[in-house]
Length: 222
Image (cartoon, rainbow, N blue to C red; front, side):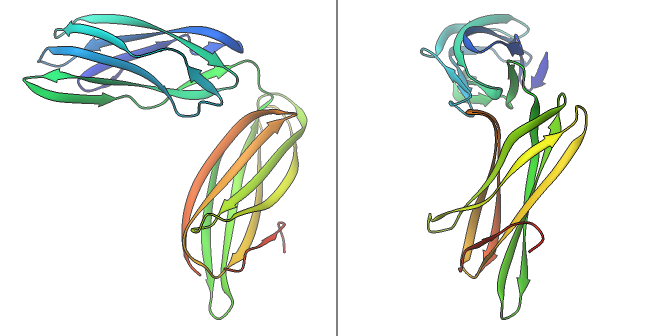
């Protein structure tokens, strides 16, 4: 079991097939104080991927070193992360706790979108170039996947940056990148999406702050 003090937690199973499934959340009070009137929730970081069904669970008392389990039903479409949260009373005061996200693998994906980053390069008198790269790792040999980038400007304007067909081998990583020019100041949100046909199998988001807007999407190398 993982520990984020004062709670040890475990979510199983970690791999399921698509559809309506049951997961079990196990919690242990690893602290020195008893927890009372627990409101326990299982939350999704992406409800498109995994949607938790039903309401939270109530538990009256969890003394130190005691363990309890809660069943949660989820609608699983693709791999995603879930986290547990607890609202309770501890030593006469309100208590709130959250776990880190726990990855639940759904079905068999051919590749995964591992990570993405973005940087802003200033060019005096010429605005700013935002460059972003995403890493795709093959879980088996694959081809025909679609990787697309989308930028959201500080004012909410969306710009489709670049779409590429991702192809690679199992166990290998491929790096794909694009860039855009801007002279608008503010916080930009950059998204990368990986699709296998109509099924989204990956999504990463990152942020970059720039000081300039003339949004012109450029393919790599331009």
